[in-house]
Image 1: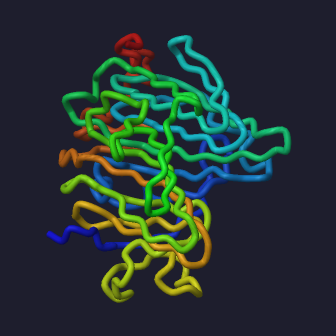
Image 2: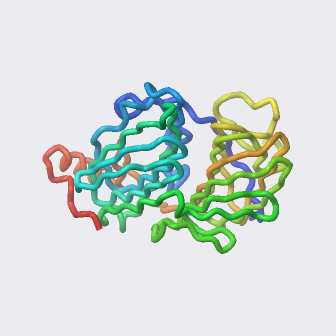
Length: 302
């Protein structure tokens, strides 16, 4: 195994419509569920047009997963069947562990200019935790620590640890790391990763090379044609890495900002339909039958 992770695949996020008519871009969630284990889906809901998001995501169930909402601008109002409600604002994170089941809604409202920006990541839960009591970790922007590295990176540590700085989201079974990283123009930055964990990056501003010197014919490219800058990848690009202890990011055409997500693979069977993810088809059918007959909510929030 090489110390530095090489790129396995680069994909471009694709437009989809979800909820009651929300126009967004899906970075992943189209392919087999095991492909990016333990992660299932990443949606990018940045928009400057309220008509793209205002219908929101009315009441719907979740079971067997965690949904992680990260807001860059605007706000999202949320409520659930257990009586919880609140607002996620700019820079805030909501890490919801659905566990045995929760019914909730998320309604984007945008800022005063009508701009809305953020991401929702879905992470799977192992069989041992799928029926745990649901819980929230609501994190305000001011609680998220930021560190600056000597080689030119500024990192918001949402979950996990980097250079001794620990994010505020705690006790997640798949040992994830969720970072918001900005790399200065003209820098080459080395970021540590845990060997054996799945690692993906999603570019949200600027462009960068994510394995300088790697030949373009050594990894798969899915989606739009190559950018003019060759092996540099920009806004809306998802980079999937092979195994290793670190990634190297290089910038030459200006700064880059990206989300860096990693986690321990679960390596269990996946039965997935919509907002419910179980291990077997029988468990999946049982969950939807419970939702139909009113017995879906198994436990109160922890």
